[in-house]
Image 1 (cartoon, helix red, strand yellow):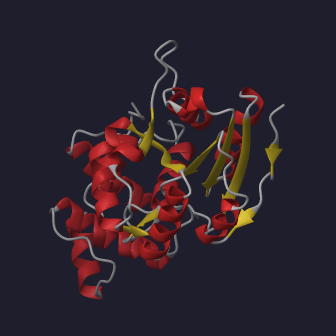
Image 2 (cartoon, rainbow, N blue to C red):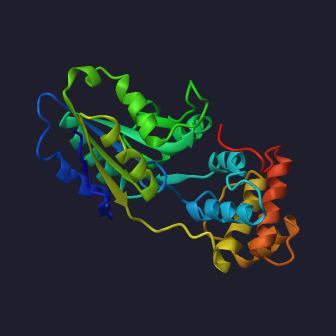
Length: 280
């Protein structure tokens, strides 16, 4: 019977996964290392595009009684303009990934990003200098049967079943890490669904996203939004004069959560990406 190991040990660095290279894989055992993408492998450099910004919008949508991810399509446009970096030194992550590959493990990125973010994700992979290609990414898809969005365990299982190792190996060892514990729970279900599978799901603990933006974060976002609107470089630092000019450009009298949200809605509407659509 399949076993579920560790519900869910916390790790502060991906290097902690290295201990799972021991014991080495048996000749008839297949190892699969699957890592979450956002906030586990990569993160946005500026405030615009990061998890705080995204969760701020989710909270604002919820308070207004609209779908929490109603800004999803606009967020794809934002993230196509934002630079990303590895959450940890890229050389250190790459050395870890190469060690797993040398020990005959398959390595995949298991993300909740939709297929419509393929091009954006390729950009972020290049910027973060990680040793993954777009072919290594398992995007969130819809079921061919029900058209429902697949959960992370379903996406991973679908890929595993398409690989020759699924038939040639007697047992499967899955190692997974994600900054959101709910996804650890999803992937852990594989141990119950597939008898020959053992799952080690790790909760990668970084800075938790905070939807309640500070005054400094909101000021920075105003400047970055104005730069984005004008298709200019989006910088993390700014001057007081930059803020005042951006406020005038965005017709913001006083910077607040409400005025910031309204400015975002207006920009999204001008781009024909209103807050009504979700992941496809």
